[in-house]
Image (cartoon, rainbow, N blue to C red; front, side, top):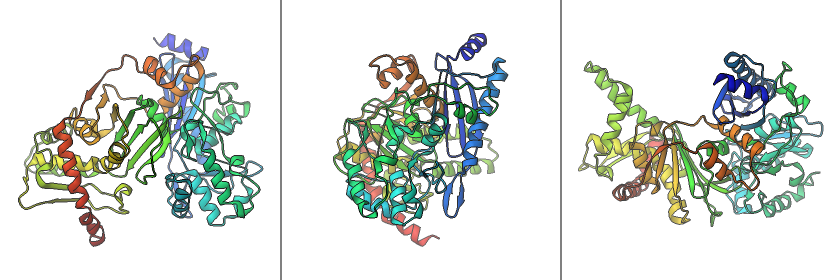
Length: 532
C-alpha cells in the first residue's frame, strides 16, 4: 500500500487542503481514493491588540509555512520521498473578518477577525437597508463600520477580502473567493451565483455622499463556485508556501472557501433539504434550503454551500459545558464513596437514564448559559437549574432537562425555520461530543429538529479534509457533475452510519419543555443581573 501511495505522491495524483482554524492550521493530503495519506499542523493564537482581535502577517505566513513543512516532513517520514508536486490545492479559513489593502497591496489596518464585535452600529443600519440579516462578524459590516467611524484608511482601499481570500491571492495572484466564503462577506444571490446586485447598488447609494474613489464592485473579490478553476500556484506563491524550494509552481488551485463550507463538504451536507449539526462546547446547525427565507430573522444567518445553494445557519454559544459540569459533580460524589467509574461509562449511563424520563422533564427546567446567548437575547449567562415544588425530581428527568437545555437555543432558532418558514429537512448529520454516547443525543436532537439525525460510524477528518475534497472536485469533475453527486457517488459511497428518526412523544415533550423554557427566560435574565 505504501508503495502505491508513494507512486501517487511522486506522480502528483493527490489533492491538498489547508484550513486556518482559530487555534490550529491543519493540512491534509489525500490520494486518489480521497483517504488522508499525510497531515501537517501548526498551532497559533489570535491576540487582542488595541481592542482588536487579530493575527499579524508574520503569524499568517509563519503559520502557513510551518503547517506545510509539517506536512512535507510527514510525507518524507512515511514514504521516503520529497514533496515536489501536488495534483490540486485549496485553502480555507475562518469566515468573515476584514483585510483591507491599498494601491501597493499593503495591509492598511491590522486584520480584524470574525471574533470582533465592534460593528453593531453598522449592522443596525445595513440590515434594514438590505432587508437581510447582517451579523457583526461579516466583512461588509466591518467595512461600513470603518466608514461610520470615519477611519482614514477607507478612501485608500483598492481591495478587501477574508483570510482565505488573502492567502489564495498571494499564492496565485487571483482576487477570488469561493461562493460559500463570499457569502460571509456580502449577501449572495443563489440564482445568479454572485453577490446580490441590488444590494451592491444599495450599498453604493448608502455611501455616495462620502465620495470615495471606489465602488463596492471595484474592491470586493470575484465569486467562483465549487469546481471552477481559481488559478495556479505561481513561482512566488510556491516560495511563500514552501521556502525550501522543493515545491514546484503551476499547481491548479480551487476557489478558497470558508470553514462553514468545508464542514458541509466533510459531513456530506450540501444537498438541498440536508444539513449538519455540530454539538460540542458551542452548537450550530446548517440547513440547505430550497429558496431564500421570506423575511429577516436576526436568529438566523444566511450563507451558502460551496456550490451556491442558500444555507440557514443557527449558531448558539452554549452546549455541553453545563452538562459536563454536572457529570463532573457526579464523578466527585462517586469518588467520595471510593467508586472509580470510567468517565465514558459515567456519561453513557447518565445519558441513557435520560431516555427513561418524562418527555417534558416533569417540571424541571435548566439553562446552560456559561456565556451570553444571542438567539434568546442574553449578553451574559448564568447556568441555572429550577423546578416546581411538585415536580418529578428524578435522575432521569434531571438528565433529560440538561440535555434538552444543551439543544434548546438551537431548537428555538430552528423552530423559526421549520415552523414559520416551513423549511423542509430530510436528513441531518450530527457530529461532536454530544453524539459520542450512542442513540441518546441523536434521539433527542431528532426530537428538537423533528427530522432524522445520522451519525457516521467513522468521523470525518474535518475542514482541511473537506477542502482537499473540493480541490479534488475541481481537478476531476465530469461535465455537468454536481457537487452533491460527486460527494454521494465518489466520496461517501459505501460509508455507513446510524440514523434515528424523531419519535412523536419526544417531539411533543420537547415542544412543551421549550414553551416553559421561553416563559422562564426572565428568571435567567434576573440571575444575570443579580448574580455578579
